[in-house]
Image (cartoon, rainbow, N blue to C red):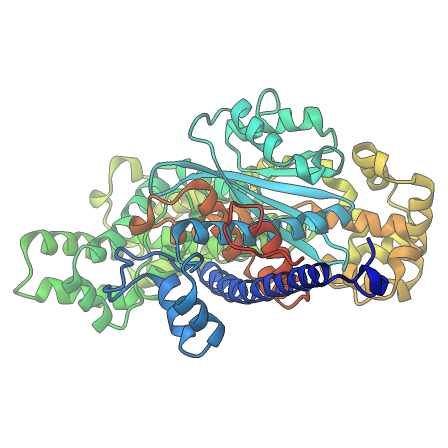
Length: 608
């Protein structure tokens, strides 16, 4: 179409000229309106992002103009309008789009979430492998929520764990229903070709090799090896170790009573504080690291607890129930068997707590977790010695009284044997049980023998003798991803050249070293192997962290939140670091606006 300047003077009639100028004016006016609308929308995007990242509520109970609390969203924008002319002008002049309605808030949340999700998909598309962690919990509204985390190595060589969303599964928690939801919502991540590991807890619905979720996923993604969460396995080791003997069950039942006793009364707690004793943590039956905290607290504050119970008994204002309980707990603390069990489990938990924390850490690799489990087993075997027993026995006897000095008639018929020999047998039996449980619970670590190929501490040894069994292990499970001949050659070069080995730190550091030195392109098969090991997760800790976010977002006062809004807000909160980095990119507002425009809108946001 010819422009105005290209027309001959004969064709430039007054009517034509006026119409063309009018069209130009209308386009210019439209574009100016669009510019103002987009500037206004950018402010709303910032407010929505801030509230989402900080896990703050949006709406107020009363959002009328007379209300003193209109909700965080309205209060934030109105406060900003005092200092921002764009917001102030829009609020004063616009009768169509104020951006304050509930539907606009939901659309903005959805647009932000979609933009972040697209970025995650883009990162995963560039990753050679992916693994997922899946677990289920119940929110405050008694709705079952399935949380999904994806783990991968990004293009910068960093191990990432990204939250995908919460999915409603109350309609069916069986393996087939959960699989259907996963299969439907994960299609955009190309998981059939890239999924190399699936990490769940030990529930039959998830872990069953016959008809569980892991079997159904493996049927369509053959390379998806099942990894039973290390933290759950360690939890099972400790719980089974405590339930095998009646003395252990009695000890932990008595121990949980200490925290309950002080939690039921502020007056009792004040006695605890006045004695300088730490607050006793509550017992959580499904989390043995919480039980270990009680053991550690009671052991470290033994004298203060004795003094606390003596003060409670001496207080004349205490009720009968409190006095009775305090007398019972005081007798427990002065009973040899209780103290003996206390310090037996304290030395065990001092090591298991370290391992539990390590396997829960986000950036840890499965190879390092495997090594820590092996070190835990070695520690338990080391403590199964006469010297370690004598140390615990002597400590308990010093704090109470040696049962060997008690008169024979005071002992029960079941305790007529030498008391020290009885406690020696109990001590050894507890450690024997743990030594048996650890290898049995972590038996499938042998199927992950290929992790030895990148064990940085064994490079000198493998330079002498190539780890053929470990090499065949990776080919057996993931051979379709590698050129076996080239992988073998690159591994041999790595083992023989110390300059390529970096500082021999953790796997995540070695990945970054290879990326920084451009070795990922020079040794692609080796880098792919490192990415594979980095992708396989040892725990489902990331999923459980998302449950904490769920509890903060969907609280008692926000229990009617819709499923889409909940999942979107959770994504903004959990991936706040990614959101803040995206906000610094040039096209951030345009990308969010494009998603926002997919919703029905009455205001123009598109330039002509």
